[in-house]
Length: 115
Image (cartoon, rainbow, N blue to C red; front, side):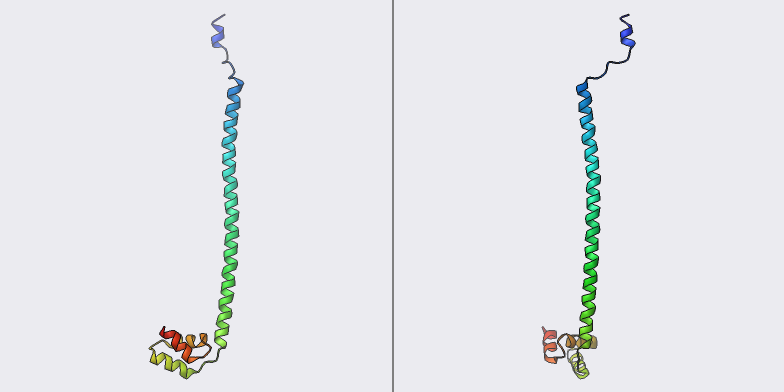
C-alpha cells in the first residue's frame, strides 16, 4: 500500500508557514484600515477647514458691509467731487469714493490719487 500514500490528501503545511501567512494578511488588513481611517480624518479636516473658511468669508462680508455703511455716512461736498473728477480726469464714482475714504478732505483725497 505504499502507492496509497501518494493518493491521499496532502500533508498539512507546517504551523510556522501558517503563522507567517496570517501575519502578512494581518499587516495587509492593517494597511487597508489605516488608509480608510486616514481618509476619514482627512475628510473631517476638510470639513472643518471649509466651515472655518465659510465663517471667515461671512465675517469679511459683514466687515465690508459695515465699512460701506460708514463711508456712505461721510458728508462730502458735491462740488469737490466735480472738481476732482474734472481736474484729474477721473470717473465721478472714483472721486466720490476717494473723498469718502478721506472723510471729505479734498486735499488728502487729491494727494492719495496723485501718488
